[in-house]
Each structure stands twice: as structure tokens, then as C-alpha cells.
Length: 178
Image (cartoon, rainbow, N blue to C red; front, top):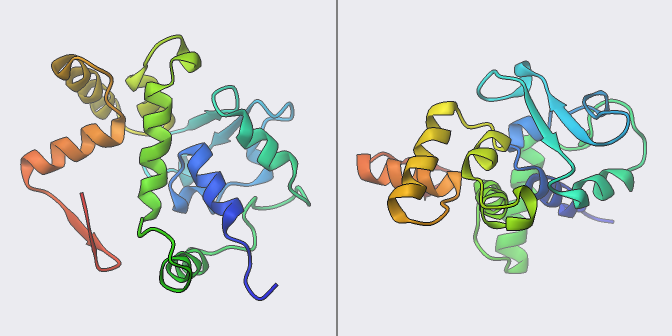
């Protein structure tokens, strides 16, 4: 094919909730032999803390990895951050895909983890915050905001609320992120 398919990368990000920078560094050795979780070592996480991504929560991630070819080195070995961004922009500009950024996939994963009652027996914002690698302060903020509004709030939503209330935002790729 003329272009390398982006779908496996998009699915991996959506189902794992990882940041792109983390996902690009995950190696097959980080996956438990029984395929029940991915262990992210501190040196590849943004927060510098160890993190587990369990397949119990998103079994489709296990299936996605089970369909992969060679199991040595990095899982997304043929991808770099630049290649992903180029392919992403091509999807939007040339093929009319909705204009979204890669952090949208983390927010979707966080919302799913928070709101899907079958996962933890009930909505669990602190569990989804932990899965996404947010600090304990963020987890506590998510719990507090959920109690304040009277329903579960996804971790990324809580962060957005906090940033908007403080007036903070950043620009990336010419887009304002909130």
C-alpha cells in the first residue's frame, strides 16, 4: 500500500489510553506472558511512575495485539511520532476525517473506563485516572468533582474543568487544547 495503515495505532491508543509518546516506546517484553496486562516501566511514562494496563478492562486490546506479527522489540516499531502526526493530518485533510487530536483518544478511553458499569461494578473515576497515568492529586480531584456534580466524571473532563477554571491552555499543532 502507498501509506502505512494508521488504524492499528489509533486502536492501540484508544483501547490502552496511553499517550502517543508512551505507546511508541512499549515493547513486547512489557506484555505479561499470559497477556493479561501491559506493564509500563517508569522510564517511558510521562509521570515517571510504573503503570499497568490490564486487558480485563479492554479485551479488544488483547485481540489487537494477538493479531500482530513479530513479537520482538517495540510493538509499534514501524511508527515514529512524526509519521503518526503526518498520517493523522492526511486523514483529516485528504480524506475528510473529523478534526480531532490524539488526546481525544485518551479522553474517550477515560470516559469509557469511568462510565461503563460492567468494568468495575460501578463508575470508578479513580480507577480510570490511574489507568491513564494521572497523579493521585488528579484522581482525588476527579472523585471530588464527581461528588460535586452528582455523577461520574471522566479524568480528562476533570482536568479540562480545572484548566478552564484556572484559564490555562496550550497550543499544539496550531490548535487550542482545552
